[in-house]
Image (cartoon, rainbow, N blue to C red):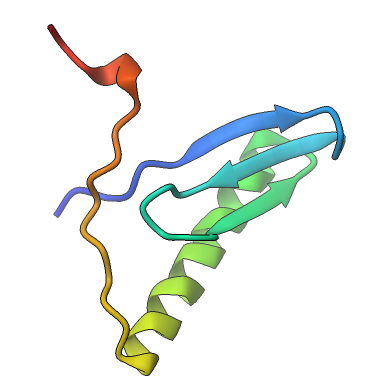
Length: 72
């Protein structure tokens, strides 16, 4: 199974990096560095998936791919 795409970007407003997983609604994390944001969003992803399993909510398949990866 392919994994979920993670976006990481710098937020001037927050003075740090935001990482999010578009396929998992509201799954995001903050870090002072890109590496820290990535580590934190991996923890958030695990918690998100576990909460969905425990509550019986559907878990979306990894589908999101940014336009930059489109070939054509």
